[in-house]
Image 1 (spheres, rainbow, N blue to C red):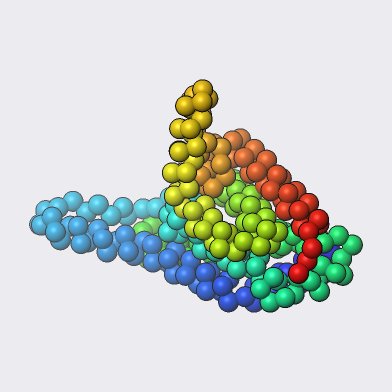
Image 2 (image 1 turned 30 degrees about the vertical axis):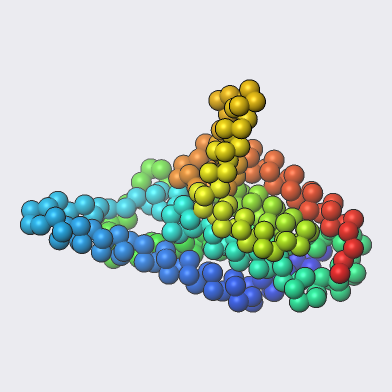
Length: 259
């Protein structure tokens, strides 16, 4: 099993989609503060002389840790697209039949892919934070405030939320072999756009008598978009959602033919 995970990690980090998506994420994180500065200067120029400078001269370290993915609420799209490509690689290139045939249970390949995504997602988040710091330090003073420890905890909770969404993607792409649907879900769940769907579902539930219930408050992708999510809700959402879809992905993969 350990060798399988090592092989998956090697293939993942050598894949072109991973390298491209990570490079774009790094550039967005690096350019975030300079772009904000440019828009601030443009706004001041359009407002005329005497206009207030709206660009903050300081940035809290906790604020950087609380937003590790760029750009903003849409930052998870790139790592999720990278995962979809990785989950589909075995099927697309015909490796899955050879790999699965060497294992006592075919579902272990799904389990291995899930664990390989942990360093994948962690790298995207760490690169986002480090490049944001680098792009910020030349234009702002970074302040190590009292909320850094709390923000660091939230950082890892967001990693857990990303892992839970990854279980849905591995189920759709690797188990059901629906790469196109996986790509659509990567875009929707990597941004706030999925909250529109959750809102429609909540409205339908309200019409059948289930009132004061907002589905987006409990879905991991929606919580991931929040800067400071409610800790207990986020953890429970990630664990329950992730356990359901990981178990389902392994179970279904074990029962179906490998082609």
